[in-house]
Image (cartoon, helix red, strand yellow):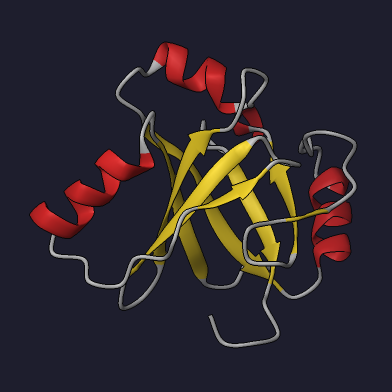
Amino acid sequence: MIGRLNHVGVATPSIAESVKLYRDVLGATNITETKAMPEQGVYVCFVDLPNSQIELIEPLGDDSPLIGFLAKNPAGGQHHVCFEVADIIAARDDMRAKGATVLGTGEPRIGAHGTPVIFVHPKNMGGVLVELMESPKDAH
């Protein structure tokens, strides 16, 4: 069912500081501009890799879903992994049929790549928060 690994989400208290790490220490050369996603309560920035991306995510506002994560992990850290799927509704229904908990209302929302996404609870995914993202129609 799952397709390619699209990205690994890394929560950070500061995207600007994390960009320095990926650029200056790890040698990343293609890093997107930071953009606000108020509907998700985060700022996002992507570090492009030859085979995937790192999504840097920083809280946007005091009610950001990242606040609790960063309270437990003040330096930040791996937040989620994102896999592409051909059909987000079919993937959601399949996850539910298999007993997995789809977070929120279960209705897909538009993610940072402009495609529908859902999140599956870590308790059902071996302790890892999993984002399923409908494969983008355009190159990414």
